[in-house]
Amino acid sequence: QVQLVESGGGWVQAGGSLRLSCAASGSIFSIYAMGWYRQAPGKQRELVARFTSDSSTNYADSVKGRFTISRDNAKNTVYLQMNSLKPEDTAVYYCNAVPPLTKLATLWGRGTQVTVSS
Image 1 (cartoon, rainbow, N blue to C red):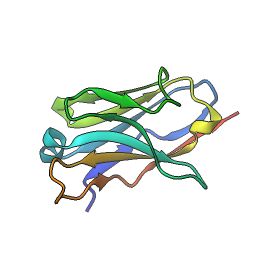
Image 2: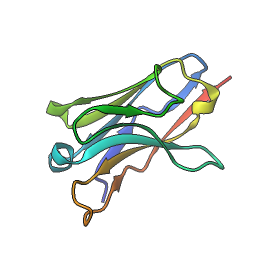
Image 3: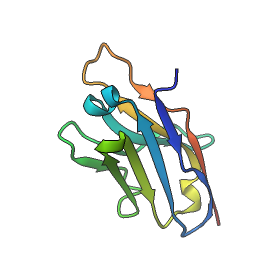
């Protein structure tokens, strides 16, 4: 089953921009904490940006000032606007949804590739 669907990945030159989208079901979107992670070859998965439990935002230091997470409640969609992209941003980006109860599983999208050329 696919509960989170990412889109918007692609290839850009350094300094360019991309906007990723993650569509979720209404039941997930309304109560799960949504966010974005990424994983580059040979590296561990890392947090990029997320909404906290109080709907504030949290960003990795490496993307602060360049990336912006946002949401459209009417469309049950979370976005990641990525500006001033760098080659080190190259990775597979995953949408993530953390449930409010520990008995429930964290959800992941299948990922979308972002490649930034130098």
